[in-house]
Image (cartoon, rainbow, N blue to C red; front, side, top):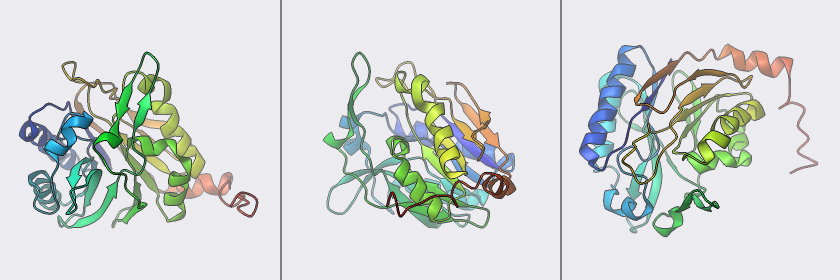
Length: 268
């Protein structure tokens, strides 16, 4: 079972982490073996603020807390994303993944930075304060092999296909779509990536905070390999859970063998 923690992000980092811990605990109590947090769950989604909230691995307080929570509840914890500062001073939008012993199992630095200017809509420039990652992230756990990407990464089908080719059965997207792109593309994109690759997709969003400068869409969801939404929620804070029947992957791929029918010699 997978649990998605949809929490409303505030300016207080400690308060955000406390909310996350509460929802992680609830997910573990319900029997979730994989728990996912949203994008930038410990700070406001504001480019100018990312450097102020940035933490280093492994001493960052948020990261240490996530490690302990994974070990305490014996879960795979996909830690949404936080601003991460490396030894060179670069800041990344990074997802830290911890195994059931609290060890770092993987780290995904957002590859595609969200630099957009939508007429009468969202204006955002992540590259003003963030550096782009360069690595595809696939992590094998005792329960499942999962690929992790962040928000805007979902719009690039090549990345999802690469994760599937590396064995991912579940694609996890911590994300923070807004009120313009959310209603238009959120569910559509998640279902597309599931259908394209015949895998499960889990999308973890922050809940709507009406007082925030950047209004998030919420609507965390889980999609099966046939493209059906098997669990979803609205914009409110809460916990979403779903059971992943991994046998469905093989059944769908056998009945509709899209991946076997690929002709990469034509489109390398």
